Amino acid sequence: MAIWLVRAGSHGEYELKFIQENRVYVTWDDLNVNVGKLSDRSELVDVMTGRYPDAKAKTISNWVSQVWRFAHEIQQGDLVILPLKSQRCVFRRR
Image 1 (tube, rainbow, N blue to C red):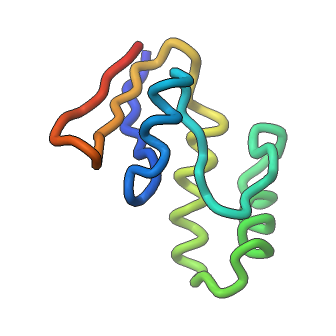
Image 2: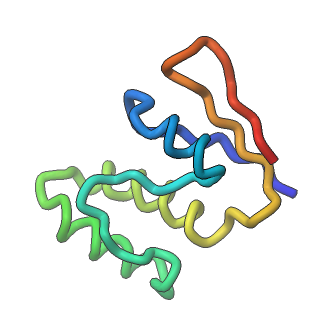
């Protein structure tokens, strides 16, 4: 079992959705691609570069690293830690 720290949007705007649905999501605006179906990281780099043409290469690389791991490594049953922005606490559900 792995332990993941997942944030619910940069301002916590997805906290309620994550908690109510007992799921976590990739929340990048305009990333409407099933990342789990991409076969390698270079495909995700191409997708993100096309969706975010003003982003710097290092920013794209950082985003790809986060999204790729989320889509290809996180498993059902892993422990997810969700730091809440709306409260001074951490939400934990298995």
